[in-house]
Amino acid sequence: MNDIFHISILIIKKRLKVLTASEALQLKKINKKYPFSKDIKIEDLVDKIDYHSTINKESAWNTIEKSLQKRKEKPVFSLIIKTWYRYASVAIIAGILISAYLFRGIIFNSHIDTTPTIVNTNNIKPGTDKATLTLEDGSVVALERGTPIQTQNANSNGENITYISNNNPSKEIAYNYLTIPRGGQFHVVLADGTEVWLNSETQLKYPVNFIKGQTRQVELVYGEAYFDVSPSTLHKGSKFKVFNKSQEIEVLGTEFNIKAYQDETNIYTTLVEGLISIDVNSQKQYLKPNQQANLNLEDKKFKLINVDVYNEISWKEGVFTFEAMTLKDIAKVLSRWYDI
Image: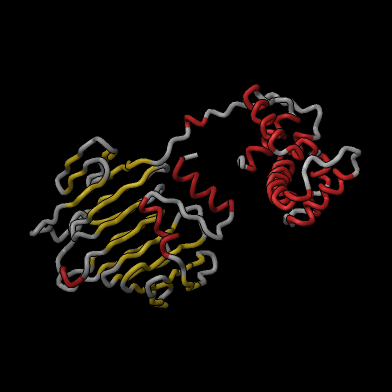
């Protein structure tokens, strides 16, 4: 069966008189295969939208069937195959109902210009590996795929950057900033072996080297990052902490995700493996695997829930996973990745 939404669009475009020759041929074939579809009046369907906003297959079918039975012509389908057509046609009707509702302003506004608008989607590009590196002296280096870069403390192949551990680091800690633009992503290996994946529109502040025996500290200035922390047992027991906005996270050798975007009023911390503690206003909360901490920045309230961690970290693998998310939130994620 043809795509429901596609069929609906063809019917609406015919009403708007913007159907192309090839589309007209497609619609003709559809009407031939499903004869009842050409008897559907968009106006009648739009009038009934309020009664069928939650599509009930039986009632939707009965409404159309009664309308068709009023005609003198004999129905174009037999009773033997009516059950199959019932579900096939209701699928089409559901698509038309939704499309008609979305386009009702155009359909019934006779004075509106119906000239089709051509949208050039070639300008919308997916995200790539790219970032800007701000060195300790303030200089900025562009990192992008295919452009190898070497600094005093790190090497980059344009897709990730790896820091080299200094066996005799200075007691004065020098920091770098890694900034990921909209439509970008990047991977960094810190001097202690900790790996961090950075999502689009993110900035991470970190030392170019860690002092042995002292707490390893980084700051997620904003955005989203996935941490695979090198365990303290490999670093003379030194703890690993992540600071961001109103919370401090202490890590005990683990994997976790933090989402703290500038345009959002909540910080989401999701634990994948191990154990972490989150300190907010001197109140400490421990997280177990598959738990997510939700901190509201406005009222400082803290909520702990169980989640499917895959949905929270799939972005690291280049996969968008949306479950029980509003269209507004989904659009926000896509706008960052496609920079639109």
